[in-house]
Image (cartoon, rainbow, N blue to C red):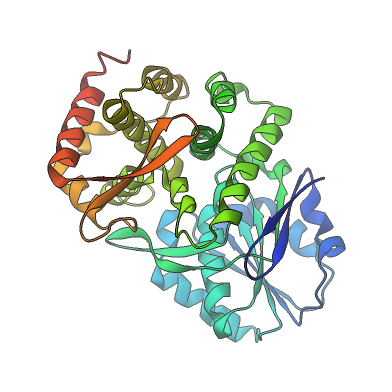
Length: 361
């Protein structure tokens, strides 16, 4: 079992990575909690919930299940989980366990942050994508006008990352998780980026997955420790997300996975970076990796004006000016404010290039 330590302003917490370690939770829990509420989704419930609940050595363990998918990051599900916590009699000495992917982690974490003004919670991620969302304490739900617009910064007590559960992930979810790993590689290390671009996700081996996850988590941990509340460098972790979030919202949450949307957002950011800084960002090679791994490109459904409007309500927008994370080079991110005319021009050129694909094939 590997251990990575994260230092937040409120407390230090560990991230454990290994196989079958979800059954070792009793060994690492330090607090004597009055009760435990496990939150999962209806897909994970069928696969893993019973064995996980049986492994918890506590006489007051409850569980609540939400529908799988991005649409559950809603005010309705948030309210229902609060109702369940009240019904089960959770108090301020209770523990909430987020047992699932990024949706479960974001939603359950926000419930923990707000129930009785905050109770402890643990992340037990079950997807590759959740290596990113479970680290750093950003918890949130969506608004119909934008992703993650309602939320908080609330670090977990620990993250227990059992990669054994990743064996049942469909390729769509593997693609989703690897988009965030690509992002972390672009922010940190060209050799890591090259390594990922040489990875065919259909033939992924566990030893490579563990290595990639550890590198990705370490990159994020370093940035989060320096800037916990996203006042400076942590904004760089939004590389690819300005366009990606707009795409997700425009197509309807759940039609593309978060990572599939971010992958197209990364392609957009790299394309702009090349034009803004006259650098070779290996855009063609990245596009070919996306194509090799069957990432979707739903360009025929996209409208420039609607995407632009979505980007204007991004959390990084300041005084109605769109700010995007770009790269001067791999490992050299910068925050750039782009005017409306330039953004519209880049959107038009990018969507046309995606439709034609002549320069990337």
